[in-house]
Amino acid sequence: MPAVNHDDEDDVISGINVTPLVDVTLVLLIIFMVTATYIVARSIPVDLPEASSGEDVASTVVVYIDRTGALFIDGKAIPDDKVLATLERAQKSAKQNKAELRAIISADQEIKHSRFVRAVDLVRRAGIARFAIGIEEQEEQEGERER
Image (cartoon, rainbow, N blue to C red; front, side, top):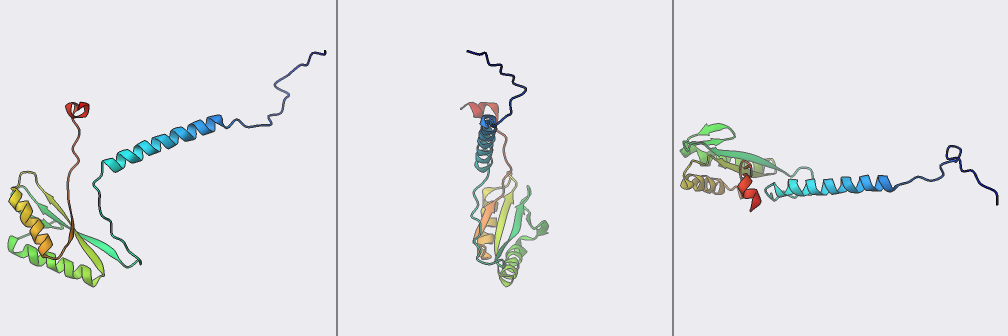
């Protein structure tokens, strides 16, 4: 039987090994899935508006209560007796533009609960049915993670 000399340099590569490509793709897929789950888990669920045309939009008004209990609407200080009228004007303007007005209510953590409830009541009385509560993300502490 004659001896066959296999010289690797002279052979033509006739196939591609796709195993490393599949491995890298699967690793990237796993990283993407874990990251997406983390992002979704750290957010607050929001009921997004549905629209059948490009004209239907939702506009937002921001109501903020500072440490002293003063109310701000879209960054402007508003006296207590003018808050309802200001929110009603914003609601009327949104309806004219065929938009749904939503409110984001943010409050300093030092205010009384009754002050926050009053702000929610004013938003609802102005006809704004959908609102969200603004929060600041809290960092986990070492002891809480181990539980």
